[in-house]
Length: 357
Image (tube, rainbow, N blue to C red; front, side, top):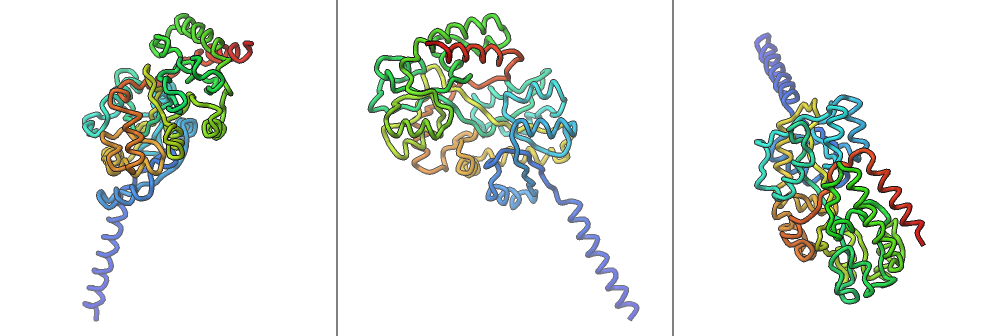
């Protein structure tokens, strides 16, 4: 009896130790991200392949910086701020650790996006971001009613008088500057030069006011103006153009000749990440084309994965390839960090445009 009890205790003890060991060795990736960037199907596939759980917390740029600032870079293993919000946060709060580029399978990433993100997330000689989800603003055009619209300044042409819409916001200032032969991002650190560019754009946009049906502030309002054909050409975002194309094949998104304006949400590693290896595994996993397609379906935007359009629906693939040949992807102007003081200059410019008769 004692032998049986002893054997039972040994088995029970072994089971407890095994269970405890499994709990101790179970790995969890704590991901702070945007809605749609980590769909459940992708999480399940990742765990099946790696054994790593993914714990998702949804947030936005302000929330991510706030959380990491409060903990000095602790609490999460991988986060997804926009690429123009990383270098300044690192300089101010020291919340990230440099990316080990040797652990990134860069062959899976669109080269121009990878290089742009490295440049825009660099601080003190280190890279702090890897590109993930991206999108652009450019031109949404009714090609039947406005076939000659190819760049931002074409919105001021007589062909579309009274049938144009855009926002009185920074993207419009930047887009028109590029279309007028300027490089506003290159002037970001020279306020005198940047003001000169703003003055040039201001004159153009004041002259263009007669062409504007409405300055849009909400996407739904703009899309209804395009549906009704009250607006035949607008400065808007790519996903909105593709949505309208599903309803009317004459309408679609066009990457302007001078370059669409792009944003990228990245991967960055908090300074006190406890699962750094898991973070790199997740980055490389979601950059596979078949996984990227699942994220595109959930988020509504494409990722920086090479051939990321390969596994999306045939309709969306066709829309993407028509709007973004490789040359147009490589010509995207990615938003860099905004230096202090520029928003005030832009705000005054926009106020003068708005007030002009």
